[in-house]
Image 1 (cartoon, rainbow, N blue to C red):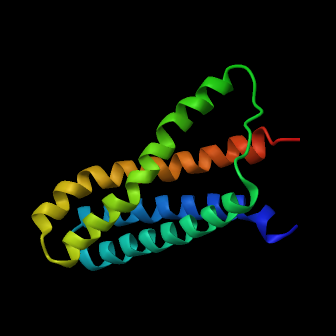
Image 2 (image 1 turned 45 degrees about the vertical axis):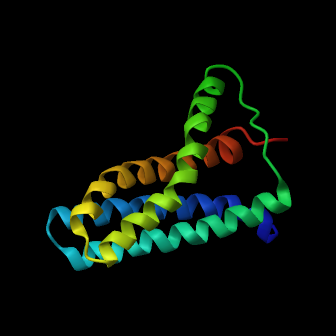
Length: 142
């Protein structure tokens, strides 16, 4: 197995880890553990950056991957694929603005955008893992 064939699995793991870190960060801020919240959220951001780098490397070299599933799963996959890339494109900008506002100490505006950033980012992380499962585990191209 070369590095390119391993990247989809690595990326799915990075997506899952990002989602886990997001949830842990959310739990910590609900408990008012600000410092721990910051660490988890910065971790989620760094993991997502690593994901993006590997994702771009993979698709630059491989191109797009065809979905081969048939039947009821096909419209489900395409429903996910309809929303996932659009929201995924928004996440870096939302995350940067959210992190910037926290870094500047503008917590009122930070919370306002975080209410949007968190669920969108979590959805993108979860659906990224689902897309991986559909394309590489359940219905791999032959």
